[in-house]
Image (cartoon, rainbow, N blue to C red; front, side, top):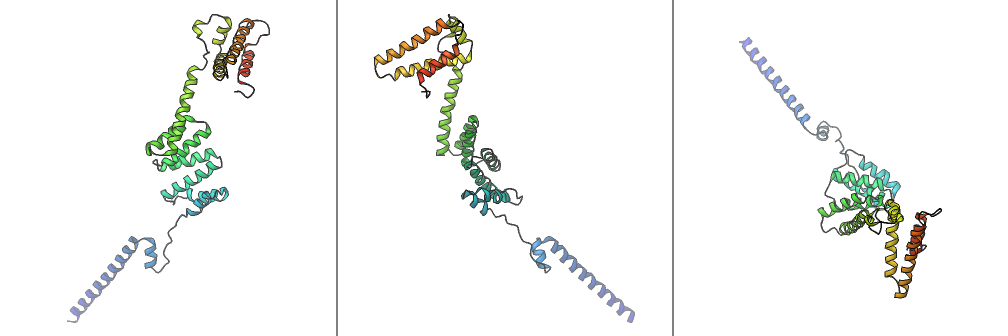
Length: 270
């Protein structure tokens, strides 16, 4: 009877120990599954602090045009891997605008380009980068960015004005390129040696065309028929001297043409 009672007691004790071990194991699993801050709190430790990247100093320095403060404050945001995407874009745009105001064009373009790689729907940034490309003299890239801004926002006033102005400028450049190296007369009909020389030299051909264009302008601006006739006689005299002087020792065709262009346009070039 005593042995039976002892056996039951041993079984109860073993079951109780297994139950306690199960409770401890379950508690350990639960702690592992909790976030770090909650785990520390549950074990009596201090909650883990969540790092917040403060963008305010960067935006304030950029808005205040404080380059020195903005460099460090914005770098703290931009170079921090924990910065939220939205804040990173704001910091890049703010610093890019600051660089642009201080004529640091390449740095401004770099910041705007990175911002656009993160969010290609920013019409204002496309327009701003287009204006920067224009400062660098890269007109095709400027037009491309202005066009991208208008595609995103057809009512973007600055982009519309910029795109329109650039389209006209490119049209003008295209027209100039179309006649580059071509004189004011038809080279297929050139008979004189001086005309053939002009047709065979791009610089002389451009000079001839400029002389002709400037001559027509001053004729149109003449205050009276008598003044217009006087201007035409001067041009006829120049052509006659050019034709007779070409090929003679000491005659410099290029200099003669440059002198005539300056005579028509005046010392100030107009």
